[in-house]
Length: 102
Image (cartoon, rainbow, N blue to C red; front, side, top):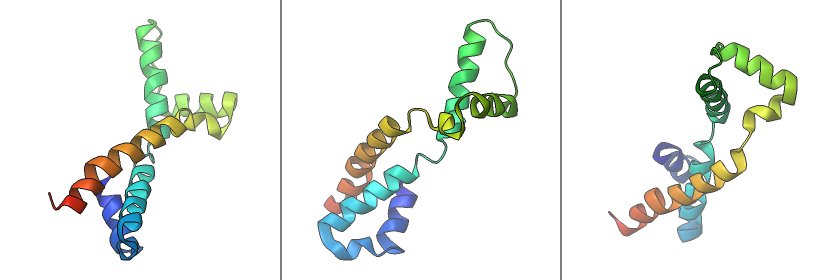
């Protein structure tokens, strides 16, 4: 998250916009940290199968099953609350300390 926030701050020059730019860079960093949502979705399915006593499938089999049943949007199940939480955490754990010089 901090790397993505720093990229937004410097490469996109968001720091030039003061406080709003710093908060915006934290938002970009938080959202960028959700890139692996499909991997996490598959992990949840795998753990549910194992805890139910079913044999685990391969990563690719889970991927194909989810896409076949729900489409590609099924791989992004839960991305909205995850994104909101990531924004909150990034703004308050990366951006605010940077603003305070900590």
